[in-house]
Image (cartoon, rainbow, N blue to C red; front, side):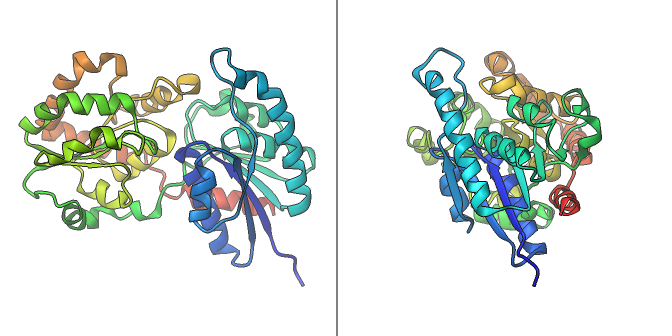
Length: 363
């Protein structure tokens, strides 16, 4: 009798690490019905809620990143690192995985490090155009590194690289057929242009401030707005729901309907968001967060900008440039069409399948 296949998947801290991990698990589960899965995350991060909601078991490590300034948390880092490595060792020895997959975040660093020391095959799934320090350190020992952008041989061993793209929600692959459903779901006017505003899974303070300041300007341009402000900010911006043609949400559950209804999108440029927006193929204005490690959101957006497939506005330039840039875009059908076609050409819709193909090879 064959032994059941077992997979450990580790990634978290943000939706950008968690959702690819779940997409990979779902595809593995589809191919190997009786396989066992264990997720490993950081104890106080969102994966501890999100992963069980998707039907998977998860164990938490006591680990967090280095802060940019001197803090008590930094002083605790060596202790947390030793604790997370020891607990990763215990988890791996007990669970006995066939392959360990890491999608980013500090917990995945500890788990993949221990797995490679124990001779267990490891796969890194790097979402960004500029990798974080954790994955750079793990790359030498990893068996396979799945990436979403060209040019990452500057950071990783070339012979291990496979360009797959980032896993995205499968319900985004047919959004062209869902426009009417999207307009109905959000109670939108089919004669108006729809602006979709996204700030990532937790929301984006600066984008929310921009919307609050420019809401009347946007409405004067004749657009209606779907605004995901994030759960941290909902109480602050909920009152805008009293305005006609403004729909504010803490979190949008039906993202396929939101994308389908949108004519223009304003978004952060986390790796998962960028991959989704390529598949969605709508004209997009990226406003990268400058507060992430290695400024990787700006680098992600620039990779799209270099192909003339999106617009990039830096936070520091919003007060000066936003009105002009947005008014020019919303009034120019030809520009919208060109941006749509170019960003759609960059889509890699089969990413999840390709990543799982690589995992299968290691079995």
